[in-house]
Image (cartoon, rainbow, N blue to C red; front, top):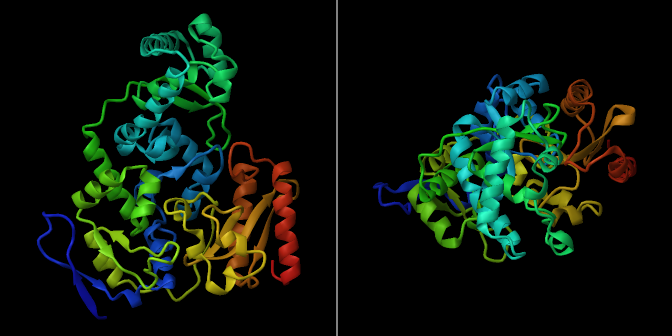
Length: 428
């Protein structure tokens, strides 16, 4: 394979890095490469939850079942083991990049929380504009810590509010408009971002958004803020196998200057692809870790089917928000899919083969079944995997919620739409 030398943007890397010619990095090849980097090709079979999250990336948690399917799809880990790992603090759900909650492994707890601190501070700025000074919030933080220390069990926000009484200020109608009805959530967010308290799933499950709080006392990270940003970029590029500058910025919420500095610090290489174009959506060059450039150059796309059913918030999509790139060109022009091709986030859960979206699915709990729409009809491998995931949902979860407010009733319209599309196309 012909290559061209491209120098990296880090002074510590002395030698140029050879990368494939752009025309060899087609959308199809890059789909399979991202699939491999995400461990969806079977390479993470038998791994622990910590190992999966370190390799594939933190699992987005919004009160849905994505963290469970993330671990089941890649390593066959069942819910009972995941819940035990949470209870043992081997993995936890914490506010990290952009202040969003993810399930991550214990080696990442401290510096990931550090990344989410700006979001907690932003929440304070909101109540600050409503006349709450820092001293009031600091006092409330100390009272929360004292109350939790005295309690014989974790306390949920309502219980905390009852215990704290007038120490929690109601911010009235103006606060409600700004999403801050009282001062308690701000104090809880700041305490959590410092590792002084942590959220506990009320029933031990990650897919039902009912939480209580308990004291924690996590030691601070050894990273300064620049080092934490550098580490996130290193992990992010490793999880994705390469991402555009804009995609990196979206996930990290770093400024342009911070992103450039972090990319330089890890020696990232700018890699043109077959789709690179100033006019094409998502067609910017990829930034990659130097070692990954060589691995991509030697990467061969798998010849046999590799079927997975994933959540719409799986890291394969969420890290880069590039669902349209995972659709084949002929599928993007299907009438029912044209709007999907323009969306950053998927309205349904995807069925994939080696990184290509070949269908969509939802779970219908009343009938204990997956309702699929396959764009080109099922193969034996697709039918088998649907049956396996259907049985896992039935046995481990009971339902498959996309997010905290998802329910069979709110989902029914999407279920009916998938069933109608499958019937109309003769594929399902």
